[in-house]
Image (tube, rainbow, N blue to C red; front, top):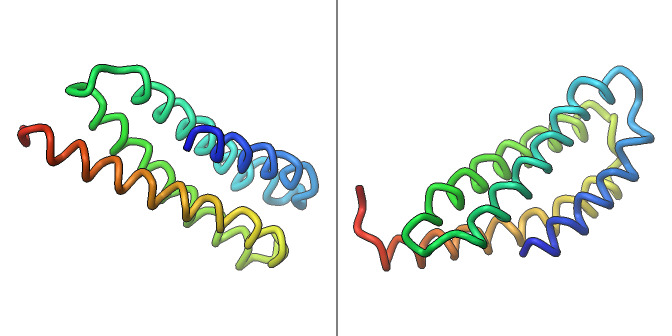
Length: 113
């Protein structure tokens, strides 16, 4: 999952350079930040004890969901073309499903607090 997210981020970074300046330093910068924060949350969860993972997985889910919305806005404002939007959306959607599964597994093994 982390490898897929890293690959999606590298793809994003190439696109980020071509976004119109009106969005590059606002919406584009926020999307870039969300990618990095999601990578950080997944990385943290990966190396924690099982009992400590779920808050980080949930954080990654929230960040990734926000990232999806921001990418959609970028596409709707025509600052990101359809081909690039789809190229980013497909792996991000897959990562979201993986995170949801991970969160579900952690929920089954841990009592709710």
